[in-house]
Amino acid sequence: MSNYLGEELAVVGRISPVSQGAGTVDSNAIDCMNFRQLMAVIKSGVLGAAATLDAKFQSCATSGGAYTDIPSASGIPQLVKATDDNKEAVLCLNTDRLPDGHRFVKLRLTVGAAASLVDATILGGRCRYEPVADYDATTVASITFSEP
Image (cartoon, rainbow, N blue to C red):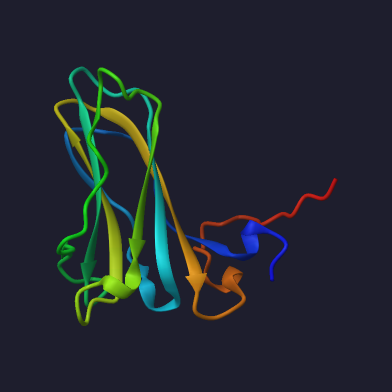
């Protein structure tokens, strides 16, 4: 059993902080072969006037193919300007329930109405093989375990 949560989760994807105009932005392709679960932490900064933010996972058989919505998978409840500036939403996915033959997943953020500050971090958990750090994205600069 691990002593640290960092030994159980890998940073497998992201959408870097961006002022996203009305439209969509996708994460990198995530190979789900190694993980039983994904968890995306979606963050809104200041949303533009009357803006909305939606998030969902999409899947595909190949990393560079055409990604489609995952049947029966839901996205986050829509974040709106009136109540959701500077909020987080968490979206989880059981990768064992992907459509047959689909091994790759992307997180899609959709901003409606006006440019808004958004970003997301995607964690892989319940790793099929260890050590989990072998599957961290190349953008992870360090993993540090702080002892008192």
